Amino acid sequence: MKRIVIISLILLGLSSCTKDKELLDEIYNEPGYAIGTVSSSVSVVPNYRYNYEYTISNTVYKSNKTIRGIGINDDKVGRRFLVVYKLSDPAKSDINFKYLITSEQYFLDLLEQFKTKPPKR
Image (cartoon, rainbow, N blue to C red; front, side):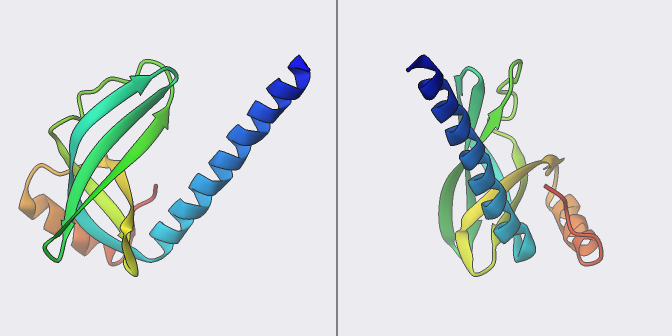
């Protein structure tokens, strides 16, 4: 019985990763860009969830991103990062922590760069 539970948990984890990958593929294949602000974070070992907000056409969207790992800190709260969202469904998004937005001009420069070299997840 114990083996069945362990195998079930592993399969559940693998299917969750596949779902996450499919959603990210959807988003990054039809990207729009915004600035997102991390509003809070929650740590439940081994996961860390960041809650963030971004605005598109005067509509505020709220979402979250879970990162798996140990030793992650919450220094991202209050900071602004690039949000990649699906153009046809702006509620589907990914905050991309590779791009810390330090100014509006930096964001505009990124948008120009993404015309020829889109961001990677």
